[in-house]
Image (cartoon, rainbow, N blue to C red; front, side, top):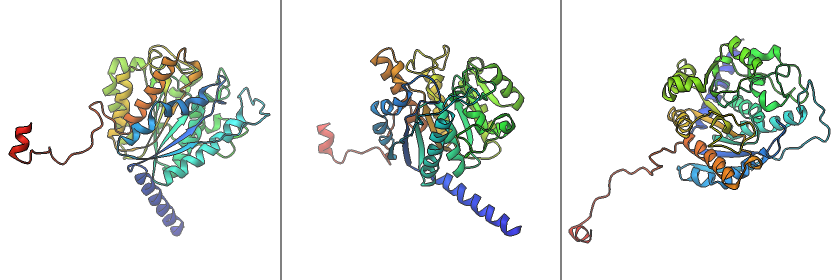
Length: 349
C-alpha cells in the first residue's frame, strides 16, 4: 500500500510538471472542424475562417513558438440513430475521443493548447484531454448558455447543449449510458467550474446550477457588479485553495450579436468588446492558462462577408488576448531606451 501511495505521488508530480511546462512559451493550435453537436451546418468551417483572419501571425507576434497542428479529420457515421432524442451520439462521441487524445498529447508535449471549433460539444474532448494531463484543472466557461443539460432535460437533444453534464462528477447518476461515450468518465467537480455571461438558461439547467451550487455570473450580474468584480470573484473561487491550470472554454456567442453575428445561437444583451477582452486579460495575468477553446464561429450564418469577418476577427482578438496581447499593444521587451551615440548623430536629429 505504501508503494502504491509513493507511485501515485510520483505520477502526480510528473503530471504537475507537465502542466507547468504547458504554460511555457509554446502554443499549439488545433482545428476541430465539427458540427454534429447541433443541427445547423457551417460551424465546421470555423477553424478556417479564424486562421484566415490572421490568427497565426498574431500569435507569432506575441513571441510564442507557434505550432499549427492543422485540423483533425473526423469520421461521420452513415448510420447514427438518435438515443433518447440525443442527435448523432456515436459521431459526437467518436469525435470527442479523437480530440481528447490529441489534446492530451499536445499538452503533454509542453504546449499551451488553442482548440478552434467547431461546436461546443467538442469541449467534452478538449477539457477531458486536458484533465488527463492536469487532473486538478479548473474550468471557466464563457457563454450565453450553460450547456449543462442532460438528455432528459434538453429541449433540443443537441449535444452542444450538454457537454458540461458529461464532465461533472456530481452528474454521473443523472447521465444515461449514451452510445459513443463509453470511453469517458466524469472528471470535474462542480466547485471547479465558473460560468460567465449566461443569459439563456433552460429550466433543467437552472435547477442543476442551483442544486450543485455552481458559481455563475449572468449578464445581469455583470451589469450589477461590473466585470472587474466578476473576475476577482471568479479567480478567487477557483484559485484561492491552490494555484492550478485553467481551461478557458469560450463560445463566441457570449458576445452581443452586434459584435459576433456569425454564430448559431445568438442571444441579445451579451458581452461588450471591452468586457470580453477584460475576461481574457485577467485569465492571462494569472499565468495559469493551460488550454482554451474558441467555438461556435459559423461563417455560413453570417448575413454578409463583413459579418463573418467581424466574428472571426473577434475570435482572433479573444485568443490573442488570452495569450498576452494587451490593449497597449504587444511590445518586444527592451533592456533600455537606446541612447544617441555621438554629437554628429545628435545634429542629424
